[in-house]
Image (tube, rainbow, N blue to C red; front, top):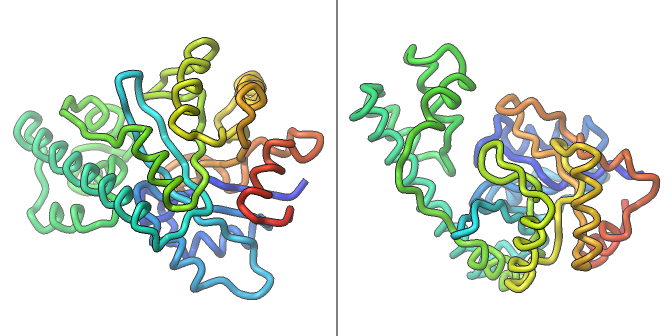
Length: 286
């Protein structure tokens, strides 16, 4: 079984490895096919392509959009898109601007409600990042003594902030990926917001709606899945004749997830849905 990891993040979003450092880690892990799926950002893929050498692992363009509608939250992955397409660029920019406004609202809440503030230059530096989020705010809280660890800052403060948050709707993300020539895939389908689990009939309802929007695949192999969650996701992929992908959701030191840990090694042979995905993406099986 080839070592494939189609879900990872760099410093362009909320990972701790730069794109170039991530490429080196992929080499060291002997991964043969990988995708960088930064949140609301595609420039990291271009940075990796410039650093690729002969004999390196195969890179597939990736991106991850955070979405929400009246039914809940979703993370939509996009693969194999044209990074120069207007549709992808517009969708990425829309997601980025929503993310910036969310960070501004969280900083305002911390300051006005909890009395937690940072020097102005730190706030400006944070908002100048490609895609700032909870880990970046958490690191600032640790730096200025408001929390002992980043995880504590997120758990006890940032995740409890109640603000109006904007999200792309899943239809918008899916259509942006499709119009950019890409393949839209639902990330870690069993996991919703926080510790919410999406299973059984609820998953069926979600997939019925998302496939009508143009969803083409499910992340059937994922580092956080139990064998039962993996089996149910693969069963839904078969029911809806969807592609299957495999991803670790590696974030460097921001998450305790090992690069390449997707659960794909539990499969006896190359899953048919993954094989079809690779064919659709124009990639020969590594």
